[in-house]
Length: 327
Image (cartoon, rainbow, N blue to C red; front, side):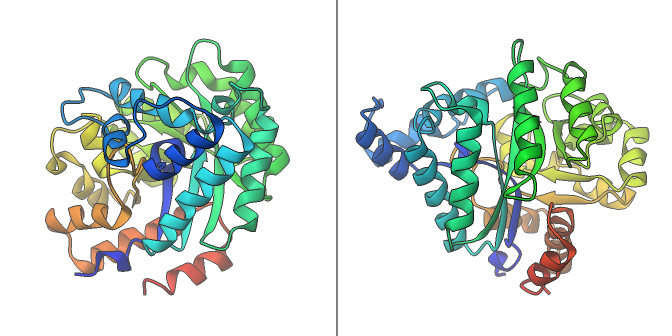
């Protein structure tokens, strides 16, 4: 089976978790950034999650190193171009790349400079149709930076930015702590997705729905509560499922734990994505191969691919174009 036929669009893809060793080493050498090794093969062990990873929190530790090279305009431009070129070579036609601009301000860049650099780079490149989702971050002292992120999403909405997100340690910092950020996003009529139901249970998904999320990042534990599943179906809220990542973070014990069949039977739409290509050592076509091994047929893989396009934060006209690659 040609799995790449369905690997057309990825709408849950983190920039920092998907950088190649090659571009990290290139930027580090240019900017005098110290790395644990400058060997491509050896650096991967610092970037990829270990097989014995025990939780999402441990998984997130793999992001500190790639963020070292996302602190300059040069690094942001080169890293994003490298990612988009690799996605294009894999056969993708569209992607929504998410990142937290506040995480790229450690060396003096402002959040606005970060976003400006990326939207300009995305607009000028010719590899693939790509948009940005700006992430607010969970944490104790992130509110001010998060509000700035939402303001920037408003400023650049329709100019390369298509939505807002909330990312980070879900179990440690529940959605309710970030109510004001999404009240502001709603006021500005910005679409948003919220990471929920990955490291926490169905109540996390329920809170994201009540906060107005149009999509849910992961959401696999929503099936633990029938009422939450009904809410997803009623409001036509799509889940952004990332199989390999969910296995890596121990959100599931095995692929068979993924609730695809329960969700499908309940009428809940879900999409297939990579989350972090480097950290989880995956590509989109491999995620579709996993579904095939779980017993899903070609027509079902096509359905999931079409779900992804339907859920994308793009115009109906753009969706029609993308669907022609699948149908």
